[in-house]
Structure formats: C-alpha cells, structure tokens
Image (cartoon, rainbow, N blue to C red; front, top):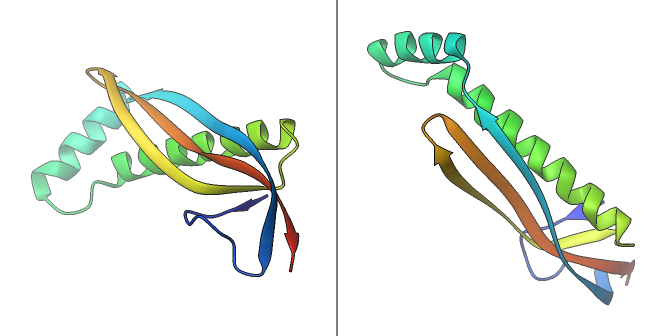
Length: 106
C-alpha cells in the first residue's frame, strides 16, 4: 500500500478515487506507564513511556486504515492525516484517515 500525505503520488496517476478510509484505535495508559512517565517527567526531557504509547497507537491506526483501503480495492491512500482526541482522562482515540485510490505507474 502506497500512502502519501500529498494529493498526488510522484510517478503514478490516479485512475480511480474509492472514497474515505479510516483506521481507529483507542488506547489507555497503564498504571505502570503512568508511574514511569511521572518519574521521567520529574527529571524533564523526553518521556519515553508516552512516546512508545503514542507511536504504538499511531501505527495501529495506520495499519487499520491500510486494511480498510485494501478491503475497498485500493492500492494507495492519498491525503493521509492523523487526529487524536482524549475520550476521558487517560484514554485517547487515534484516527488515521485519507482518500483511497487506485494508482498506476506513469
């Protein structure tokens, strides 16, 4: 699956637009993750516990989006974006979305 944040993919032409695709995941911080993150925050700098959580959530949402696109007959996604919302304290929804397309090499 080719994924781009742009409206086009260099070297390819869009043959068909197949519509909006999305991948959603909802993640929560564990008690241990909160403790480790809290300790890291005391000393300042990068909070690895939360970086790992954010990366995992984004990758999961991205993978779901690609699966959704493939199920709809796409071989690429253009205009891909991420969004995140806190549903409640410590629980976050991460959304990956874009436009599913069929592309062919130029």
